[in-house]
Image 1: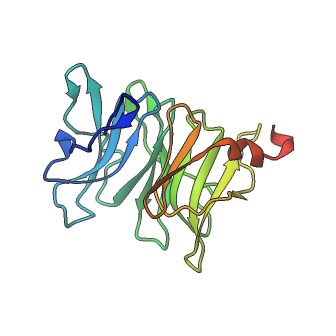
Image 2: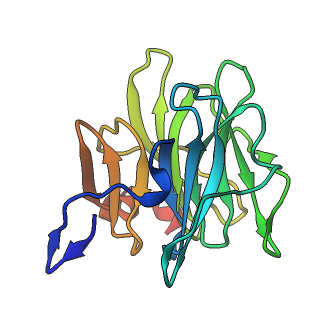
Length: 209
């Protein structure tokens, strides 16, 4: 869908997604790359890779697997891409919960993924996450042992660690995404919803401002 004269056009199927299973599309902050979970078999979740398509003068390119370091026989799920090209994703290692990894983008290639620590991988299930392009905060849709869900936020501290998670005033039922200008948060909750991101600064502890 595109905005033309202030109105959304009718949705059209992207040509690179026809007849395949595509999930969790994630744009790079500059909008020039689109990362997708790309599966040849629509009935097998495990039969998928994280791929990328790039914006060109002629339209979008064909999907290309991002890296054999990221795509493995395990199930990888997309979360977000930061301004420096770092790719955050979840890998299912057949443990109780999936675990969040990051692969940095250095000299045009992705590095060996690093499993993130307890600041990211809590005892609860991190269903979805979006990290600010400059990595100054992260929003986490988290399910607790009772399987109820809540949206939390954590802020990067001066020493590089993360603050204690703070509950946000919204119920989130799914995928998270920030608008390119950072002013709006989009998420699933009985459809696609959006809110102004002013709450992010409002909730930030005074000692971190």
